[in-house]
Image (cartoon, rainbow, N blue to C red; front, top):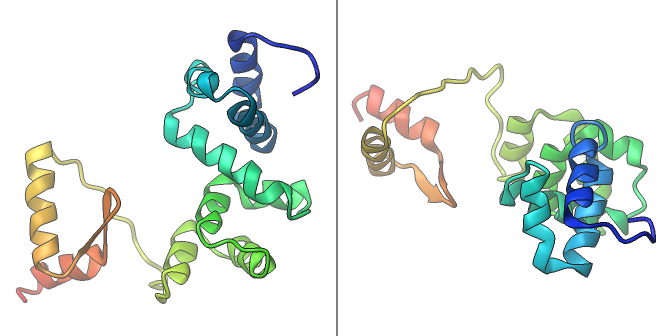
Length: 168
């Protein structure tokens, strides 16, 4: 933030203008806002069109990478989605390795490798549109066949789905 005091609407507009153009600038603005005015942080994020999760993720990215001295061009090239993933495992000692991994991997490959798995080569994506009831039944079946609940999702769901298909 420049030394000038801005109201929430002005700050939200600035952050909204950065999104898509310069996510690091938006991340820094959000971090500073979170540090200095935590009571308006989420209000400004919402006014900027950001959900809570994205706002917190961007602020965390700024907090984690500001002190490492990584060139902004490198961080921009990696992108905020991969930086968010890498941030879960980031230490000062492994930063270079993780950033290199992020630069040379897709999001899927990066997540797999960081979980200690070998990514499936030439993997295909399947998208399903299920009602809440169908989704719950799907989830229960996957868990019964080896998927593991993790946060709001499941790990090892592909293996579980193939076990269902193969009748195991």
